[in-house]
Image (cartoon, rainbow, N blue to C red; front, side, top):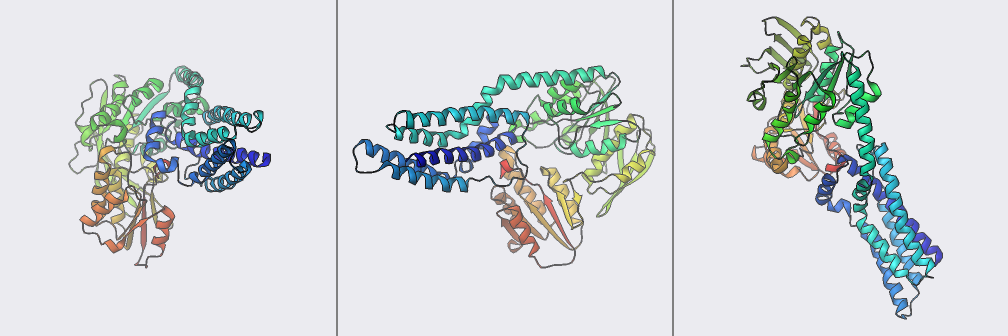
Length: 534
């Protein structure tokens, strides 16, 4: 009996570890926010409490019933219930082994502190069960089993509870790091700070601008898609040097006030708004909130600074900025922007275009970048670099050397176009335009778009319709966004026999590989959702 009870506790502890690793991962992907995590749990009830876990719960229930029967003088050995629980929990533990994630849990300091708090809570629970079982000479065997059942059912609440417990400590640590970063910037008297924001295109814009400015300046830029307050703080504390002349700060936002918070941290003198569209519409609630949030960057700039604006974008063009100088740019055929691209030719191996500056100066450029929207971002970067003192001619070589940003319309040697990073309606359509320019067999592989609020199905259906004459085959990954994408494709006349709904990305790629070859094959990987959206 004792061996069986120890086995029950050990198996429950192991399953707790598996569940906590998964839930912590989802909590991290939801920005360590209890409200976002709660919303995610509501949408993913089957992931939070999968049916396989009821095997172990059923075993514990049998143990509880048989132990109650012993107290009621049933002719039954409670050890039978304990061993049934062991067998059932063993099956659950095996089934709950964590699966490989696309973006694994990062064991940051915050995650480690959460794990310590969760461990303390778990020790209290398991210690209580052990006390019920052994200090009472097994008289409360059923009570211990009941406590384990409650623990396994309610374990999802432990992560946000631990987050609440740790909140004062996390706040103190964050404030310390923020103040250190602010002091570093305050001590760097000559540093020029450029804020970069937009609903999409900001990471590509940052990388292009870093390469162009590096022809004259020592530039520090936030790496990857680091664009949150604590992300910027970490880069400033760990990477900022006295020799840096320019700091490029990518600024992301999901809520009204997010850009203002970032500006209060780094105090940019210059900025660029690359685009405005319905990205993160689910959290912003309306396009008006998105526009006002992006223009929080404009509000933060000084009178002697300037703001670069993509006036091809209707939301940007409609907004007036009065507190700082504005510099417009665009690639539209009818553009009247200060910096505009003319004679734009976009092909499968790159693009050529001519930039016309405010004073009428013209300069021809060649780049390996694909897609008109990439050229749009690049023209904005040329405008900033020129305004900061680099001649248009000096920028020609840097533009020629530019490489596509990883996972953003990156043409791979195997014929795949990797545009896997967080798609949006405008980016989705721009990527489809690129795919359409390729000869031979053109294949779209996508799980669709998320975080678009009530309009998510509508935007996915629109992009499905737009894709109908841009690809020869379409693979829709998963079953969340596939229905509206499929509706759009079929409504626009796409042949159903050339459409496949895949259970996973690998399933979809296997289907693509099995397709008959029809000349050169080009596969567009459009968006690759993180684990919390699967």
